[in-house]
Length: 258
Ligand SMILES: Nc1ncnc2c1ncn2[C@@H]1O[C@H](COP(=O)(O)OP(=O)(O)OP(=O)(O)O)[C@@H](O)[C@H]1O
Figure 1 (tube, rainbow, N blue to C red):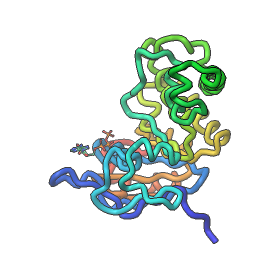
Figure 2 (cartoon, rainbow, N blue to C red; figure 1 turned 135 degrees about the vertical axis):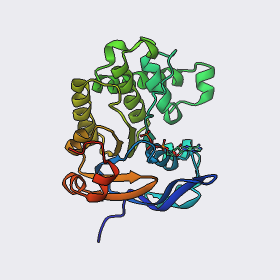
Figure 3 (spheres, protein in one colour; figure 1 turned 180 degrees about the vertical axis):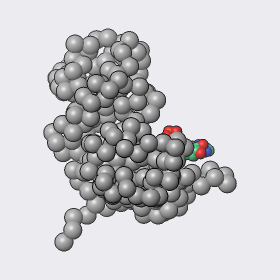
Figure 4 (cartoon, protein in one colour; figure 1 turned 30 degrees about the horizontal axis):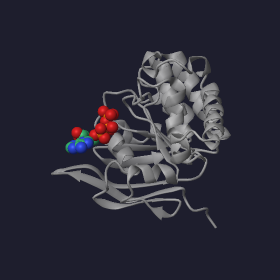
């Protein structure tokens, strides 16, 4: 019997007034997959992530995660179920230190209670120490440990992007949604990041869905690819299938699909 998909999107969509920004979308992701989501500008990719994470409630269809319907859950509950994301425009707490940016992600899961935090009881300190250790571990994976006390806003751009992923990982997701994680990075930083994404997928047993504009990059790293165009999923398949799909080539007319 085939395993239940981790994520199942069933005919989902959303209207903004007269605009059907995303319509009739079907998607199935299985545990452990690394999947790309591509499409021309304005195709609806970020809106689709917003549907998956509860920022928007679908006006059509259903989204199931681990068999549970997510449609009307607020974002924080969806995060607790195991869906974490990064944003196209970096959203760090700029004034907080690098390590605190990671710690906020798993504060809700920490063992110590709010009361023990407020009154600084012994439980608080061991909890806090444990959090520091865990946060440092995440920073090490992303080669950010030496910046742990810097304000996040002072990090160079590429490192801020990595910190966003570290923070998303610290929330202990099963599904990690990355919205253009390599945007603004140079080619070397981008290659390193892609290696890192493959590595964390293995190490944390993750399923990853990745929005990316750089076509060779998506083709190189993802096992399967979905293509959105004008809010509709026009194709899905292996990189080779996508590369040779006439609908995809047409959608990208004028852009290079290599
Ligand atoms: N809150 C909203 N209200 C009205 N229209 C919206 C809203 N959010 C998104 N849209 C529209 O939905 C469409 C899809 O936008 P979206 O940002 O999801 O595209 P995208 O594929 O992520 O584009 P890009 O690659 O440029 O980031 C656009 O036409 C956008 O203007």
